[in-house]
Image (tube, rainbow, N blue to C red; front, side, top):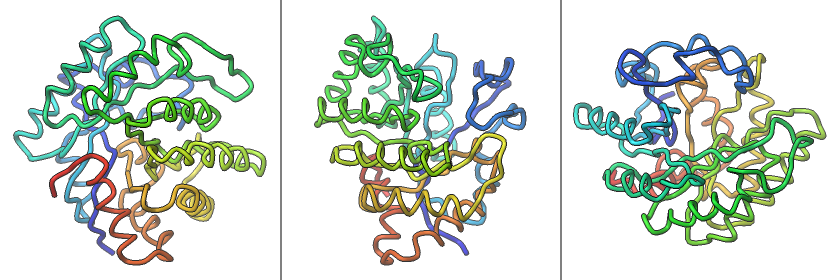
Amino acid sequence: MSVTLIDAHHHLWDLNKNPYPWLQEANEPHFFLGNYDPLKKNYLWPDYQNDTSMHNVIATVHCEAEWAREDQVGETQWLTEIHQLSGYPSAIVAHAWFHTGNSEEVLARQASFPLVKGIRSKPATTSSPFAMKPHQPASMQDPLWLEGFSKLSKYKLSWDLRVPYWHLAEAAEVAELFPETQIILNHTGFPWDRSTEGLKAWHAAMERIARCSNVWLKVSEFGLRDKPWNYSENKVIVQNALSIFGIERCMFASNFPVAGLRVTFDTLVNSVAQMIEGYSLSQQQDFFVNNAAKFYRLNI
């Protein structure tokens, strides 16, 4: 089955020309999918087209891919050049640290690119809920971080939120402090712990942040560390997430090529399409196309 869609989250990289330390140096030991050696090769627009060829991708949103942080605007410039040649990506979620002294300067530079619609800036997080400590530097409770975050609305930029589910209560506090800033939670809140207790904790955290009307959700990245992609488990995750947020605040996102470590694009799209068959056709259309266009202000 071919699905017409906007991909609200993917990556491109050219390792021959551009700096991505995580892909060009030793593997990060705590990467959430485990060994990621297969990602250490160029992934350019023709590669993405090849992966997505079974479906009608009418627009895409490129999310920052951890280009070397000493040149935060370099990736945006490169992607703008890719867009000028191919017409894609349709929008960019760029990077800017919130807690550094030059935060607003970088935000202003990123916002000067017409394709930039939002910022993904990963706050400091812990490896487990048991390691959490309040008010850590560069965390969502750091006053410097909050000061930088407060400038997003000035530049009409949204925030792509990427944290494990045990940090979602902190993120909800940020969303409530800045209700004028649109926020989108990446990767279904990372439901990594599939035990009964783990899913219960994820569900409660998702309910907490979903109460913030300015927070939307990317239904994406169900991959687990060193485990195969499981349709039945992931169906439970998707259906619970849609029930919590409401499908009107949810959108499809592939996280390719990263998600390709566990699943093909075709299997991913067709699986998610099957998981949401209980919704009306107009709701399915919103999920796959209209919600992403609305959130990222795309002209389609």
